[in-house]
Image (cartoon, rainbow, N blue to C red):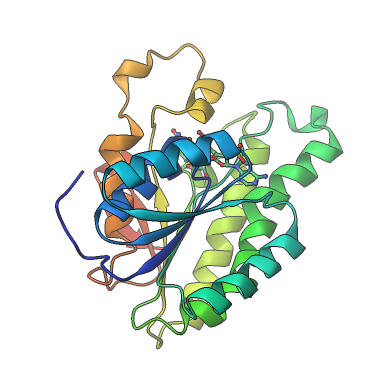
Length: 245
Ligand code: NDP
């Protein structure tokens, strides 16, 4: 964690904040002065987050919400408008792995669900939140993707295709905003010690990969007004190497 104060008076929304990468990124953002709007379904995880943020002297608003519910995302945008009139940062982090499985064995319902969370929910977030992000003097959107979007390993097709779709959306959206104050970038966290990683690679010793607390500052740096790039893919699996989307 850092002692920067670059997010003072800024309002930042983080999806998937009840555990893992989103949880520790939310703490980092709050420590750097942001008011954090924390989204996830699990109220207990959000309450733990709130306790930690308050103990660190920060502030958060908890929004228990299922991102599969697009209308609820729209209502949230309206509520943020009424309370703050703007949004300075969106870290679109919530995601799911789905089954690691031969493509032909995937249940259609699961395919729909993974795409709905990893892709469609992010379209809905942009639709609902863009007017607020455009009210910021330096709006920042960070989509959390995966190297799977490029590696497309056998049996990882569902997750890989959803993250490739996310990257494509982000690239288009960054292009749309090339000449605005709103910047859009994508990050690949690389292997990180979370529930999702344990499910994806069950035989791995978790102690051999970074804890989300360690990588959180790198995520939050990218939604800071100090980060001025647009349309970049930041690859933490590759020492933070940055390349155009
Ligand atoms: P976790 O599974 O630990 O956390 C996922 C978060 O998403 C939880 O807070 C969960 O909250 C939330 N979430 C899941 N479904 C929904 C839903 N329907 N509505 C609202 N929130 C939801 O994952 P990680 O922290 O590991 O992953 C974060 C991001 O990083 C993901 O996009 C993932 O694809 C990506 N990533 C992770 C890597 C890793 O090694 N960990 C590597 C590469 C990419 P709740 O269940 O309470 O709703």
